[in-house]
Structure formats: C-alpha cells, structure tokens
Amino acid sequence: MGRRVLVTGGAGYIGSHTLVALQEAGFEVVVIDSLCNSSEIALQRVQMITGTSVRFYHGDIRDRALLEQIFTENSIHAVIHFAGLKAVGESSQKPIDYYQSNVTGSLVLLEAIQAYGVKQLVFSSSATVYGSEAPVPYVETLQTGSTSNPYGTSKWMVEQVLKDAALANPELSVALLRYFNPVGAHPSGLIGEDPQGIPNNLLPYIAQVAVGKRKELSVFGDDYPTPDGTCLRDYLHVMDLAEGHVCALEWLEGKTGTIAFNLGTGKGTSVLDIVRAFEQASGVSIPYRVAPRRAGDLPAFWADASKAKQDLGWVARLGLDQMMVDTWHWQTNNPHGYGIATNDR
Ligand code: NAD
Ligand code: UFG
Image (cartoon, rainbow, N blue to C red; front, side, top):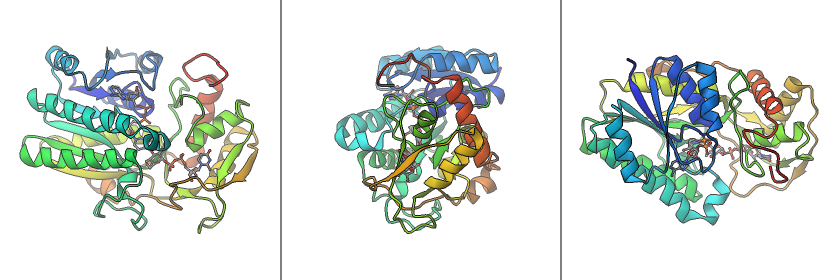
C-alpha cells in the first residue's frame, strides 16, 4: 500500500494537478475541500486520468469534527495544504475572510496534524511573501514580510506559525513551497484552471478572449522599467509545480524543521511575450489594449530556483510553448470550465 497523503484544497487548480502527480508516483490521496472555489467534477476527471480513486470529504478545514473524522478513518502519512482563498484584490475588500480561511484554517489543521502525530507538511506559499522591496531574482535567504495585501500577509503569517510549530515539535518537518506564476493544464485537457467570474489572472483571461468570452485583454501598464514596458513574471507549468510537491514529500522523509523552496523557472517573461506565445500556440489572435497600471503590481520578479534543483532535484521542464498549448487545449475542450454557461462565466 502506498503512503497516504491528505490534500486540502485538492479539487482546486493546483491541487487537482498535484493529485495526478501524487497518484502517478504511487501515493494514495485523501481530499478535503469546501468546493468554495472549485468543482467536484475536477476530482472525477483526476480519477479518469489516473484510473485510481480519490477519497473525498466535502467540508471546511476549520471544521474540527470533520478533520477528526478524516484522521481517524485514514492513516495519514503527510499533509499537503492548498486550501485557502487566493484573490489578491478581493483580499483587501474582505480581509477577515482571508485571515479566517488562510490563517485560522491553517491553525485548526495544524492542531489536528499534531494531535494525530502526522510528521510531514507541505504548505502552498507564494512569491508574494518576499514583499515589495526584495531584489530579483528572489532567493530563499531574503528576508520576507513587507507584504502589501491581506492575501500576501496571510501567507507570510502562516509561514511564521509553521516555523514556530516545527521549532517546538522536532518530530515535524515542513516544506514551504513558494510558487511563482503557475499556468497551463494537464495535457489531457481534462483538468485546468476554472476561475469564477471575470478572471483576475493573465492566462485565464487571455484564454477566455481566445474563445470569444471576453472582447479584449487589458494590458495593465506598458511604462514599467522592463524591456517592453510590461511586467515580468516567472510563469511555470502547473504539472511541473505538481511534481515539485512529490519531490518535497520525498525530501521531507526523515528531516526535521522548516525549509522554504522557490518553485519557478528562473526566467522572467513579459505580458506581451505571453500574448505572442499564446497566439503562436493557438493560432488565434488576441486583441488587447494598454490600460492603466493595476494597483499593487510589481514591475518584475522571478525565482532563483537553484535550491529546489540542488536539494529536491526539481527543475521546471516544460517551456512556455507547452504552457500555452495546454492552456488552449483545456480552454477549447472546456469553454465553460467545469460548469455550465452563464452570462457571468
Ligand atoms: P484554488 O482556489 O483553485 O484552490 C484552492 C482550493 O481550496 C479550492 O478548491 C477551494 O474550494 C478550497 N478551499 C478554500 N478555502 C477552503 C477552506 N477553508 N476549507 C476547505 N477548502 C477550501 O487555488 P489554487 O490556484 O489551486 O491555489 C492553491 C494554493 O496555492 C492556495 O493556497 C494559493 O494561495 C496558493 N498559491 C496559488 C498561486 C496561483 O497563482 N494560483 C500562487 C501562489 C500560491
Ligand atoms: N495582467 C494584465 N492583464 C490582465 C491580468 C494580468 O496585464 O487581465 C498582468 C498583470 O498586471 C501582471 C501579469 O499580467 O503584470 C501577471 O498577473 P497575474 O494576475 O496573472 O499574476 P500576479 O503576478 O499578479 O499574481 C500571481 C498570483 C498571486 C501570487 C503571485 C506570485 O495571482 O496569488 O502570482 O506568486 F501571489
């Protein structure tokens, strides 16, 4: 029997792709998800891809009784913690919801992890913890903090909580995975990113323009101090990111303490480069207009991903072209995501 992993938020974008990677690596998976930003169909699709079942508990990670039930009914070896709210803009309007879900949720989960003697935890952190003053490329040894929105602050706070928890409990080992910009989809086109309403992120927006759901892309600012004036980000394929979780789990065996890893490609790509790469991969032209800068956007950041390579043996293998091809494949196969067409979607 494979080692059993509890995946919180496993029906979500990164979680569902990670389930595939975990099952293909021989892990058994148990999922808890409230479905507040996802669909159970994603889990059915994962099972179609892997031919292996996913045990699903529908509920909130703040529900202590449900966590107790999960840990009692399953012998959990490790936890991968994706569950949380992630819209940067919304977090400034609803800070309490964000701290509740992301910070309180992590605390309740951590209590259960300790109570049931689970020794390994992988946490979904973000490049955003480096804050607005950090020099690029971001390296793990940089100071974190100076976050500029409640979402980023919630990620930073949970990192601190986990560091202290691992210090106090030498049995516990924690990997803080700081993701850069995950894009793309599983090559089957069966699972992918399914944003609710108007997408905040670049790739889902472009994909919806490409299928005619949105008229044009707004490029937020072309007067940044970058080669073409648009922002640079480190886009990585979600399947590479998923593999990073498998590598982190393997690495945590027998370790103690907390360690942070950047998961990115190490390359910065501009908004206009992404538009061109998408057009090339899809053969569809993307109408765009230059709009004012979006509040809170940093001009440019990308990862120094050498620590993940050295310690985990992980590198991002899939290039920009594959990221675009797989985004397009998912979008054309599922123009309304997992749901049905409504005016808003
Ligand atoms: P997602 O919204 O697709 O997935 C999150 C999942 O968690 C959803 O299925 C949602 O229903 C579930 N969830 C939310 N709150 C919950 C709660 N209280 N209890 C139970 N389930 C809950 O997001 P994603 O893009 O897959 O992101 C996964 C994680 O990675 C998040 O923690 C996010 O902050 C982090 N992250 C994402 C990005 C990105 O660009 N997508 C970048 C850095 C970090
Ligand atoms: N952009 C546009 N038009 C759009 C959407 C985005 O021009 O319609 C631009 C943004 O201005 C930015 C770039 O595309 O320059 C990428 O924007 P995203 O919203 O896709 O991604 P961000 O880098 O802003 O943020 C993402 C996640 C955060 C996470 C951060 C770092 O959404 O949760 O990466 O990991 F914190």
